[in-house]
Image (cartoon, rainbow over the protein chains, first blue to last red):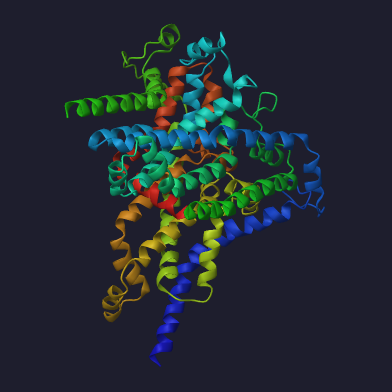
Length: 294
Length: 274
């Protein structure tokens, strides 16, 4: 008699405790997930009903040159950020982990601080740093190219400079993860390697690199996912221009939905991004598995 | 030994210089914000040699910054409280209770990491408009309540607590809610604080969603509001930098005060994502 009663109480408690989270999760996450899929098969405006049009939106996407531009720019941005930020973060992490005590804390704080800033603060500061007339970095640019460059209005400079700003902003996160990874490497492995007469170079490639690989792979995939979702910095620094050179997938989704009132088409664009990121996330597990076997 | 010490010192010096260069943009923003507009365009000394707060005063009185602070603080606090309370209850059930569908629920929560949230913004906007919540606090808040990492982190910490500790509370006639709030939560104040801080910071910093849903200046949060001032100030470098720093001050101060918690939370939540 007492066991079913206890069980009943457990079930009641389970329901009461999961209900608030489940309610929010279903209404504001699962439902929108399914409705964005459904919307992508309709010609709905942003607000209001639409007709079922099957795969027409996707067919239209295949012929949309602007969409290819967006995809290409996303890819270009990934190339400009993911590996460079991981390499920079690794160098910083290796340097910081060699420091001790207060010095280490101070240096880590300085490298991490930009990560907690709101994106619009970051873009305002860099717009000022790179200001065409009075930017403090313009003399540097002039020294390289011979003249000042309005970087966010220049089709060649725009993406690399947004990449620089993004790396500056988000790099602290990667540094932190890599430092955590370095701390988990048992020090006696380095002592053993030193006893065997390994050079610092060999110690890095034979000890640090393989043992750090799971974290490095994590950083790489988290960055890949993050950078595919590029929108804020582009919107704030160049608004997709000049000549669509910084137009990216989420920019196109935003314009289609909120400026051109094409909710259905915007949803189809969102679905492509969705698909890309799900694929990357699934590959992430594979990558980590392969790394683990080495 | 002294050679090694000298080399260590030189190495520290080089790393410190690199860190100083890294943080320079923030320092330069501070320097600029403390100068008069005339001096900014006439000379570009790097040292802070003027403490002119007129840009700050001007920004505080001529923009809706106080209003945006209020919106940001309010929405971020509500988000943090709801995310933590619902997350810890759900995590407790997943960790300590057996109920039909618990494995499925856990799987769905883990799988939800894969969904890129901005891809849902169109559908979420439509939903908010159906609920008449466009341009309201709740419109800003509701879609930001989905933070599955909180559930997963809490579950891991609850899993680690020995089950024998439950018996004492159960013998005293306490129920599951007593267990959660009198035993599991007090044992996990550290991680609760850490999760609260990063949830708050990410809500405070969120740009894209509030930018879509807050359509009037009075509803905007800090990161969205300050981009509006951009247009109305014209050329005003000191004021722009004062505005940027005022917008960033709460998170900078929060980070410096709770540094250990922030880094702890970042590491724990990222470890889960892996």
